[in-house]
Image (tube, rainbow, N blue to C red; front, top):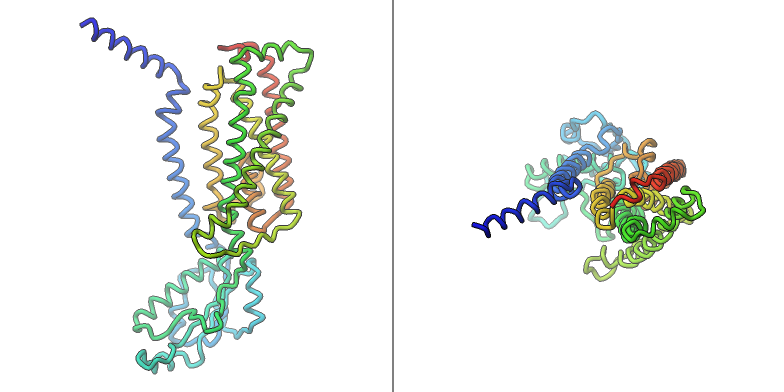
Length: 400
């Protein structure tokens, strides 16, 4: 009976320790379910946005040799699609390399209906070929292309495959006019911002908690606070030094990502040609926004670290914040054109991710860059003011 009482005492003691720590309860019990809900909700919203991406943009489908039988097939239930019967030439096809052009070209062979009716699959003669020229880097055009090919494919299946869609000839004719830069830029804009932001935050987390919470735990923060310096100078010194060290870690990680990217994307293929046709302004904007991101990261983690009692407590407090930033890094994978509204570049962390995505997608806009840099500097100044107030509070600095 005595042993049972001792066991019950230990159980009550552990329960009291756990449930008495609100931060531990939140990170252990509440946060996992909350994060799963947020992640899957975000993925659901992102997938719905991808399905409707570009649905409000008018896409002109320029058709050559339109047969009457195809008119009902091409009349898609979408008010954002405009059919125009007009011949086109190679210059019109080449113009589609500009992904900002909301247009696609559709060519039927002359006398299409007669060719389809007379086609004999056993003859060995190629079936009539329907050519669709488009740019997959344009979200609205890509969406309309999928709808057209689905409608034509369903009609073709009902006719026992009597015509082809975008059958390449012996010369390797290209129907998708998206350039390698556009295709690779789209991939990199969805992948690299998340990786970079994770590496930057990992570097910040590795040093920031011990720089303030560690000094509180060791008792050395008291020595700093009694020195003849203003508290805002101490706060600024902490944040700038932590930012510079974290920036070195982030740059090292970024170089590693850049060097390993060809091997990662090739995924076992013999070779892959990845064009890195980025200009000096692209690199300048990227470095500026990386530094601004590290500044605000170091500021936020420093605030949490100053409030924490020790390094372990600081790690517990920073973990939910890190996961939120990681979730923000996933957003470019599901982004629509609306996310590039100017007001989104005032949102801390998310604005840096958007600028990185713009740079890698060859869509750099210096107005957005300047808004991001300015807002992050303002947020950093606010954090320095808050950290100064915390350094002035004995209740916070000497709480154990």
